[in-house]
Length: 296
Ligand SMILES: NC(=O)c1ccc[n+]([C@@H]2O[C@H](COP(=O)([O-])OP(=O)(O)OC[C@H]3O[C@@H](n4cnc5c(N)ncnc54)[C@H](O)[C@@H]3O)[C@@H](O)[C@H]2O)c1
Image (tube, rainbow, N blue to C red; front, top):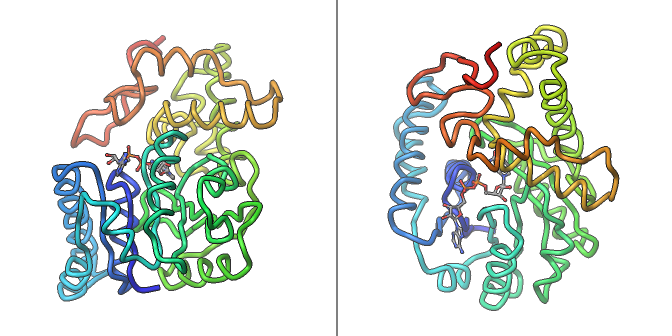
């Protein structure tokens, strides 16, 4: 497993390419347009410079990492040269189906196809290929260069061999892999998202304000950030999509997304990425300001 293709150069894709290249793999980062790839390389460079300034990496290691990364807009040609393809495109079944079919049609027989999906069924993604034994979930956490966990998700048909290879590669990336089975939300989001949704219900029902809810969870439960702030970081659209996967997958009303979450997404209040969610987010400022609609 030497040549890795990372498909999707967004928030997660550039972090995954960074970490794989830093640990000696030859990475090709693929996206739809050159400008997305240029942005990703600029981001990776900035993050590597931060690691050098904190003495986590040397200048030479930074240069070696950048030299290990190529970019391309030609998925077919790139996947055809790969031992492993990590799919990191938007959380949308139709988009992922298309990518999985293309990759499966061109990738070498031995190649493994991993997905970084937060919640889409690995068994379903595998069904779009003729190699379901070589399809697996490799769920990195955000920000990828910092977070230690990789949730490794076995689909119904994922082989022991594929799982063992991915566990070993994860350790080579200096991460801690944890193997779980393929049910809605896996483990991470099965537990995290209902907590965030419950925090939004608590706000919606007027039990507490934005700051009160986040402070209770930070100081009372030793969480590094409150659930509403975390929801803003993840993206409220992503939170809603994952709640819908849990709701549809288990057919259980306890997973119904809070109407306030639905309303905020409909209104375009998505958190950090749109500039406002439960808090107002101004570029370059770390100050936490509650959004005007939630001020008493
Ligand atoms: N953001 C998070 O905190 C987080 C955490 C864990 C997992 N994930 C998962 O990672 C995946 C990506 O999330 P993200 O936040 O990086 O999304 P993003 O929107 O930042 O990036 C997605 C990228 O995929 C590209 N893309 C879309 N269609 C493509 C195609 N056909 N070919 C090539 N590139 C294509 C887009 O241009 C974009 O650059 C999703 O499955 C998401 O659920 C996200």
